[in-house]
Length: 308
Image (cartoon, rainbow, N blue to C red; front, top):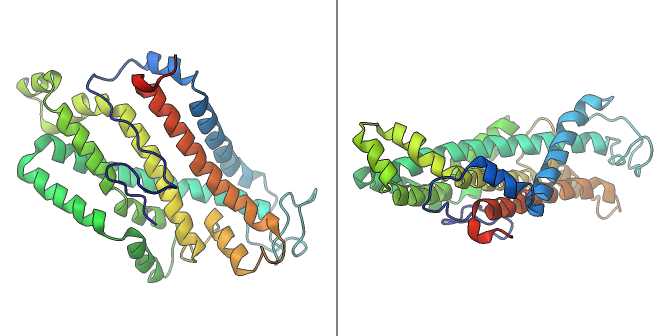
């Protein structure tokens, strides 16, 4: 599966792309905050993400058993007072796996999304501001990476790696999922580079990177933030797909690996709903909450979408 829209995500599962940041410089944070605290989509989306993140961060230290894959209880036991989410067919605690899986899911999203965002900004800002031959070279590089079947490349890489970790998985996802974001940033930078405040900075002798990060980037801050949310959610979806087909981390546990194990050991046929529903619901909740929050942010930052 691919989460590389042009310039906005095309897959049904990926969140919708943010609206253009507009021509005017960024508005004061106080005005954004005024609308943010009154936007139910934003509050609901971010609240759900924060709750799931808190479970992932605080859950493992509170568990008596630090190893989520250890056999600790009766086999195929339904949820009860001792094992809140039941046990697997091997007696593993599903709750322990779930909270550790949340942590891994957020980690791969942050690593993959951050790497993709940094590459996209570097390529997009340079291509959009400098133009000319550099723009043509970077655009060609972007188009080459854009047409490469990302999932197939990740399948090959993961299949030939002896040891796979969440961080390495996030690294490869980030290195292959930045092109659509770079093209979107390039387009916005190209429209902002002719504004008067950029011309004044250029006439004052400011260098390329100073103009980019002091003049152009601040006027795209809301757009860049929403872009990171899309990359974050896309990294989680790609990682979950790799995990489900057995190419996830070789050590530890993730929500995708929980689904893969449940499918491999016939949890659905055995009626062990507590094994596959929590990880599936967790992935859906994270990505869905990010989508809702992204829509809310779009309404906050875009005056045309604000509700009175």
